[in-house]
Image 1 (cartoon, rainbow, N blue to C red):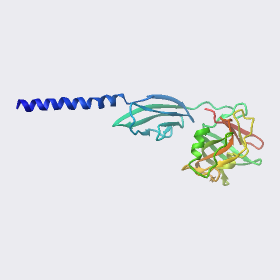
Image 2: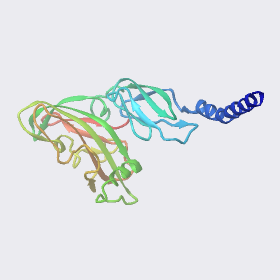
Image 3: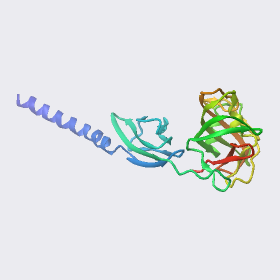
Image 4: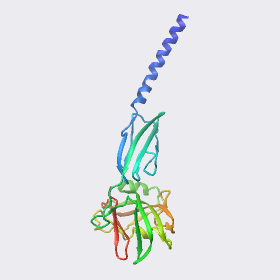
Length: 260
């Protein structure tokens, strides 16, 4: 009996020795941030430290902040959300607080933030077409936008002096009587400019069909409709952040910026 008890004691001690490191390892797993303040339209990559195991990400409120499979948080609108990373039977949390920067005047010198929900009357050739709201959900340039465009192999590869700029919008047709094309409201042929609102950017090409949202180049809206649409546009390199204008009067435009 004594021999049996001794063997059991040794076995228990041995089990304790081999399981201790895993408990220590679990304690060492942590997020690089437990709280983060962001501005709408910005992004931030959360990282799990102390493990190489697969991480599952989740947002408690997607209208405030979303999170990708790789832990990139995208700030959407003002409020708070909790991003949870689940790994090795452990849940790690980061509280995200999203703020919205104050809008400018909508002029060349003081453009409005494109990340706010901007409501306006849209005009075409001097005639009012309807009342709309537009909000920029995401803007990318350089390598990030290029990688997105690569999802469709038919899209052109940028030359050394070229880059894709990418826009994702939420557009609502509040009131009116006609069907309107999204590309007329956000006219990327003529109304995109560099960061100082002075240099008009020429479309070299544009990207097609590489994400599960409407293509801004083909989407249409009827009164009461709202859509999420995106477009990557190939332009001369080095002008981000971008400004753009929308015709909101018979002979006037409102200016917006993608600067965060």
